[in-house]
Image (cartoon, rainbow, N blue to C red):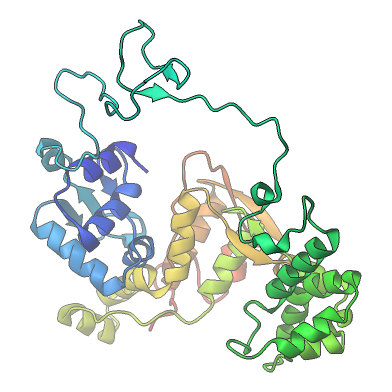
Length: 402
């Protein structure tokens, strides 16, 4: 992220709407020279737009000269985007939120809002003793205790407060209602249906049972998913039959989710799992390249690998982009328990380049490593053992193509 480029875009770029969002997304990932290499799906996620709209905005800004696109100019064949820093620098500061007056003097506060009529009304805001035209009124705290109205919390009716104290029983009832709402929120397949029966069952439980039912809701739903059960009992059934008691400590641990650090064991295991899935549909290739791909020529194979890496695995490309910003991914406890045996592979080692060659031959995207990363975790045994159908580093290996 370059503060320099972001500032230029915010203050000078004469664009708006989707064009501005896309340009800001590019600036957010650019270096100080305006160079950046994000994929279209990543820009779309940042700008909250569809891939098609992003492509239209990018083409429009290229035509207006705000960016230059270098096809396949980035890592793993990604497009390179060059923000036109010279053009932005020479534009006027038409979009600076607040301009100071000529000469650089501070903007004065409004005048004569509360003129002083007597010495007891306030304190003049002029240390020299002159008239400043406004006051900073000093309000002394009351010596009397706060009344029930002042103690009323946000969202609480005054009628809920009796006398000068809040009833402990009433507080407990409100907390119980809040917990019930948390329990039924986002209950699978129960949106918009009546909760009166479930609320009666909830009220029949003891406070300890209510707390246990709420804490084990997530692990219980996850347990049903692992068992392949599509139907989820209603909240009233869950409470009446006390179904949460079927949740074991192991189930709770499995349901717990943690953030896996980028380039670590769990993170790389997730990457490889996503890459083992079928790739996404690729956009149509130009006629010449489509013919080369269909005929299986060397140019066609290389082109198809690059297209797969660019478009076939948007989730992996998003993870790689997030990793450059130091962001990992969320994994479930069960994934941590199922990790294969991993080993740390030093950057620029022979094993590291073997993995990189294996990814390229499979048509998989390759990660962008930020400065400071020294090792990346991979399954133990090397790339050749993980992908027996490929021979990393050798020509003629057959990648998984579409």
